[in-house]
Image 1 (spheres, rainbow, N blue to C red):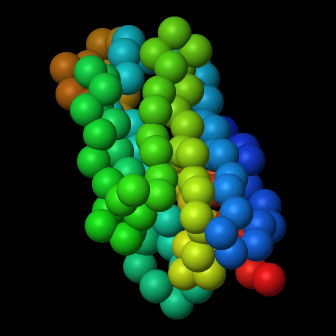
Image 2: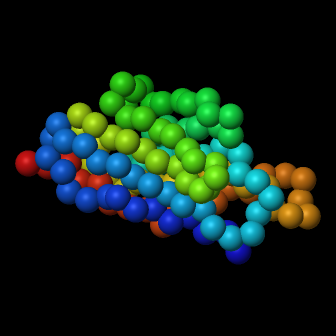
Image 3: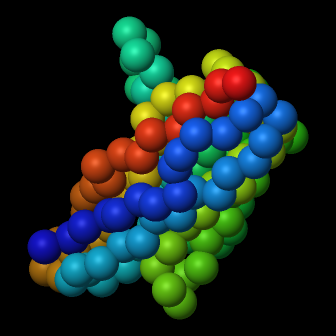
Length: 121
């Protein structure tokens, strides 16, 4: 059983910073891409940032220059450092990971339960 657990969400004022973390646990052969997605009320879930197993990153235009994604392969974690936060960043943030399980030759996608980020004065 594979599990992703997010932490670090909370309330922050505009212009402030937050750091989200996501830890993978369970039985799997490897982790490929990892990333962060978010969903604001009444909106579709959207990509925030992704990072490959080799460390290549990709960001949504709306967060580029403000957010930084990184990963620690030894600890099986991915983090999202958020700065210069704006009210429009308010959303539930979800951790995502592609994993190869033992006995399979394909990747499975897993999601965390989400953590609330609220940017408000």
